[in-house]
Image (cartoon, rainbow, N blue to C red):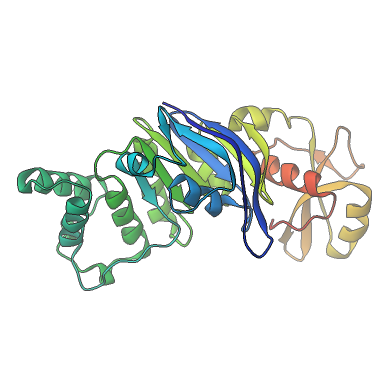
Length: 298
C-alpha cells in the first residue's frame, strides 16, 4: 500500500505559505522527510494525521481519501507528534490501557495482551509500574510509540522523534522504528540527516514548503561522487570563498574552518576530493537552491 500526496498546498491566515504544491509517493517501508526547522514538515504531518486541513491537493492511502475520510484514516493511523503530553502521576501500563480502550480494544483480555506486547516491544515492560513523570526523554518517546502502535496501524507518522535524545536512547528508538517499517508505511519527519541515512530506503528534502528532491539516499549520494571538495581555511577567508564557489557546509575545527564545496572541478590547489555522504546531499540541495551563502545550519 502506498501513500500518494498530490499537489498539497497550505497557507496560514498570517500569509505564510507552509506548503507549495507538495507531491510525493511514499511506499511501504521507512520514508524520510528531511528539512530545516520551518520547512513545512510538521504542517504536512498534521495534514496527513487529519489534524489540519489542506487548502488544495489530494492524499490517498490505498482506497482511503485521507483529506475527506478522516475516521477511516484514524482507524489505520499511528501518529507520534513532535511534542505530546503525558499524565505524570499515572503509570505507563495504566495509561496505555486507557488509550487502548479509546482505540476500540474494549475486551479486557485482548487489551491486556495488547498492552503487554507493546510495552515489551518498546522495552518498557520492566518499568510498566513506574509513573510517567519519572521517565527519561527516550522512555517517553518509546511510550509514545507504544500508543501509536495500538491497533497495528498500516500507516505510521513520526515527527522529529529523536530530537533531544541521548545517543543510546536514539539508537534504541531508531532500531524500533526500523522494525515497524517492515510491515507498514512509516513516514519519518526530521532535520537530523543521520536518522534518514541509517533507516530510510526512500527520502525527500523539503525547504520553504517545496519538495526539492525525492530519491533513494544511496543513489542521491552516488550522484555527488566527484563533486565534493574539502579544504581547511582560516575563518576570515570564508566570505571570499563563498563569493567565488558553492560552499555547501562549514564546520569549525581548532580555530579554523572546514569547508565542503560543490563543484565539477577542483576549486583550487588546497582542496581535496572527498567521498560524499547524505549531509552533502542535504546541504547542497538546499544551499544551491537558495543560492550561495544561504543560511542553513551546518
